[in-house]
Image 1 (tube, rainbow over the protein chains, first blue to last red):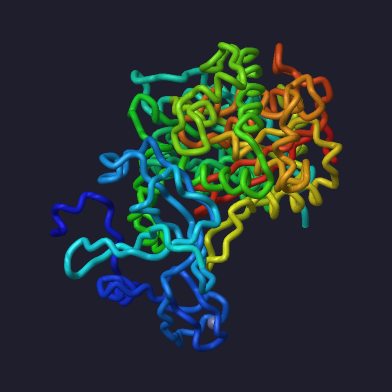
Image 2 (image 1 turned 90 degrees about the horizontal axis):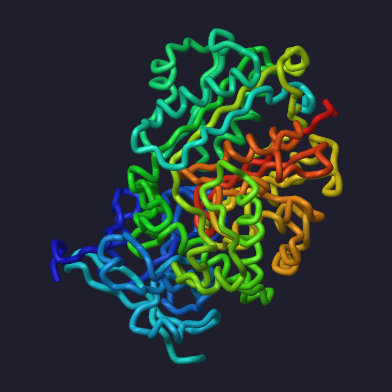
Length: 140
Length: 386
Ligand SMILES: [Zn+2]
């Protein structure tokens, strides 16, 4: 796989989020915890919105969670996705707390349910970039 | 200080076009300006404030250029589709503060003839920080609203039939609006038989994309008394935003929960005082969530609330009497039409769809995308100054 074969939208990487995507490239989902007030936050940003501290600790997520809600999309002009209809978009509640938007993959759309246990799976764009998505996990 | 009773909407004009490959957005806005000023009995030379917003690069400076206006108050606040509802509040504040006297609010779009994929485009953003965690997943607008609908169904047992009732009632209103795009009646079965765009939302749960535009004229309550038509006084207004924050968002909370009570408190009214609700209907679920969050019914009871024709113009809770974005028009940002229809209804000029009791109207615009980031703007208009 190389970046020019990957048709789906890529994240815009900047100085505030580069570390997050570098972690994804290593197949690690990493969250931030504020060094000032302790609040765990998603998505990544340099300052804690609660206390404006720039002190930060990095917490590796288990990558496990549950489907909070989802939709099976049958019509989309999104590059890459329009060739893979239908696809599943979902909010996943990570075990660590944050609710994140993603896709449910490697799982038949008709079997996706709210509350279903999922785990992160990284889709490699190339050796420097991977996109975290989720697939059905065994029940715990 | 409150805005209550300080200003009024004195001119309102909805451009009749629904498909206009022969017109530009600026032509639509100029024609709408002409219509609204004529409605108010004012001249273009009276205008000293200008508001606009668009999905594209139409700026307020270029618009002033196009109309050869040199206003002393300029406002291109872009909150998405709710912008024009907020513009009425901003214009009122500016007038009350003495910054200007007559504000023209304009909107024009050729989204349909430009073949814009507004709801299913799926690019999901403009490169803002949160977009990096959304665009890689192909988030369409309809899909984002669909996720809120799915969650509502899961938590409260809301059904597709109940959502369909909103589309059916709204189509009934469109049939009574000669300018509306769709006039043929539909049934709940028709909605359920239409294809699923993004589960659980069917095609007929979604607004159309049309061309169109409109204009509003706002001035002081004092000046409003001497103008051509009965004033629609601004009684209350509020705006707000709901977003993903740091990742603990409640997908069933919309900005109306914040703006509704605030606007109603400013107006000094309760829910029973509202004779007409004009609610942004990008999708059926948008109406249901907005009604709940405004407090017209408790959270979770929206499904039952919208059934039995309750929202019909001749029912107990008249809502979206023009036919809405679902059946009348939706050029991408619909907020201005909420206010235009409210003004028509308060004046008693709504023809076959006229509501019987017409003292107070509540408009609520939603802009952006529910379940990701959206704005809300509530505006309360009344026939009495309050
Ligand atoms: Zn903090």
